[in-house]
Length: 309
Length: 277
Image 1 (spheres, chains in turn brown, green):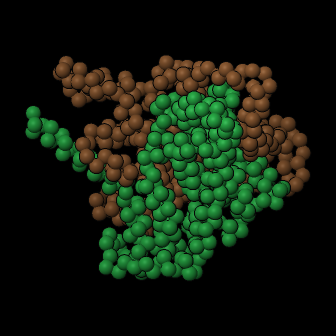
Image 2 (cartoon, rainbow over the protein chains, first blue to last red):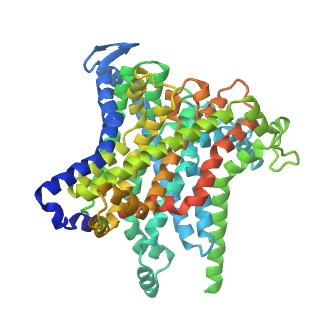
Image 3 (tube, rainbow over the protein chains, first blue to last red):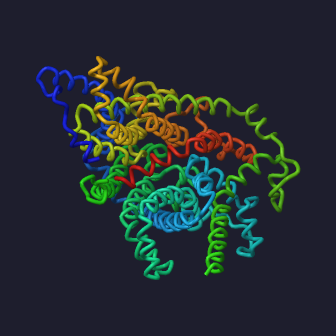
């Protein structure tokens, strides 16, 4: 990456008018995306801030300063939602990482059918989250769902459980579905990371008589640690703003038990029609995401020695 | 020694197969349910394999529900977003790497940030903007939304690809009298084909699988895309699970087929960013 930037600009292009013509041509290449992103992302983002400072009623809006923020931050529902988001995101990310890394370590050891298995293991991640969530609604259906049937057959539960009927089990259920969907992505990153570890390091460790755990502890983990940190940061960013699974399965219920911030935001805007409050919630969510985004960018900065390759 | 490794190898495979069973089972159950006749769906205990499997539910959903229409809507939106996003990002990535090499890095940082914005926040102003422009319930609104979400990643990836194509090739083409546009179209683009395929595939998947944007931007059921159509069937008074699962199969099949064929490209693309930085 760094080499490519440092490549010398050809001499011909350095001479006056030609250089200017090249720059103009270059602008024509870059401008469409720049304009597009300004119209579709920068402008709406600015508009969201503007909305967060206004009370919106139908077509009329009045400037109210930070009233929306004060109301949202004074509302117990917001803090409850933030707490739910923290539980949801931390459980999901921890399970994605542990299970994804475990699966990658296993797949990496296998001697055949690796590509076929990787494709199969990735399927939950390929399918639309909304569709995956719909499948799970049927699996978890209290009366006729196969999950209850299997658990009863195994003697784990006595009667049918309404998984989505109670705040606690509902939150556990949406976490389970998100874990099912999110493991493959982490597994994929870890598999790619495992491939970059030089075989000589394992050979050296084997010669020193290291057992499986020691090989993991002293060869695999030090090589992978950086990637694990980057992947969890990325995963936190993706999970904390995820709407689809909960939106389809519970819409935040029952009794707000699964109402994470993006769901609260959606419900406030499109169910309660309180756009100003929703925008204020959105800005709070944005601040959270940005904190992790800054961390991510700092971690993956191209001038860091580990990533320069 | 060999006995221990044979044992651990067996253990490895057992773990793999158990994990695989848990991962794949929901899809099996989706397929199994979609093939059952209505009565058998509510049988207790549920049947894991049935002698009465048929395509009846598929016939019903295409006859009595606008699932065919949802499917066509999804195809139009996903193909449109792919075309728009691939062409814009190829132009931009080429322009940045060839004419503004110094500007590329800050621009990539900007792209990374836009990639991380919470979409539920952007939906509010976007919804108002589209309704002001009279673009609710149109393909265009969805195509623009999905392109905007795929663009940052696409540009980012293609910058890497174009950087790996030596400038000497461009220069040789220019010496031979090719214009900048000709060089781009006839010389550089063909060389970047693997990158373009990955970016196209990635955009298509994002657009096909996206849910919440289409949920907000379409209110007319004839404009629903697959994901919204399927999720909406859940809210019905009495859910016909075999029909719902048949619709889920129709929604999932295209991405699975596409993915099985092009897995290599996509995996390289996804892992390149995080692993190499």
